[in-house]
Length: 179
Image 1 (cartoon, rainbow, N blue to C red):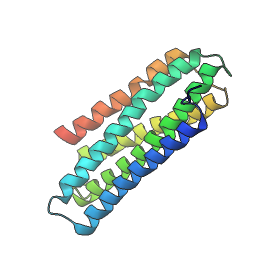
Image 2 (cartoon, helix red, strand yellow):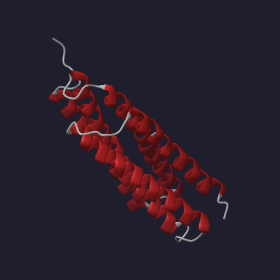
Image 3 (spheres, rainbow, N blue to C red):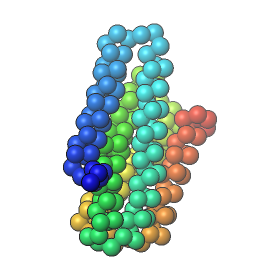
């Protein structure tokens, strides 16, 4: 019989791969901060964008999982599979990507802009709101894990729009800098 992705061995391997990837990311960042190349700003900006893309991918995928999980009978094999997928997405991608996005974003806001500019304050407000969405999804993962979801698939379809709207506003603030 073949190994299933919901078995513990694939989960351990996924955590190990995630740990190695995050360790390499942190080592690269530490090396950049230690050696301070002339293009440090560009490296930090690139790493920030990579982390934000990973965070957004997870934030856009998680409510889709919730939509399908809502239709699965509690305790069913399908429900248990969704629980595993949600847990891994949250712990292996979403949380680390959010922390790295915040850390590098604050570094850039301080070193490049000195936390000055109305556009930056608006962008930070939208990122705080995006973090609130992240926290809502984290609580939902725990509720689904206990088979205590009380929200409908329609609710999760609407919640799927929140990260998209906030992403649009954040990108406009970062690129256009309207005020």
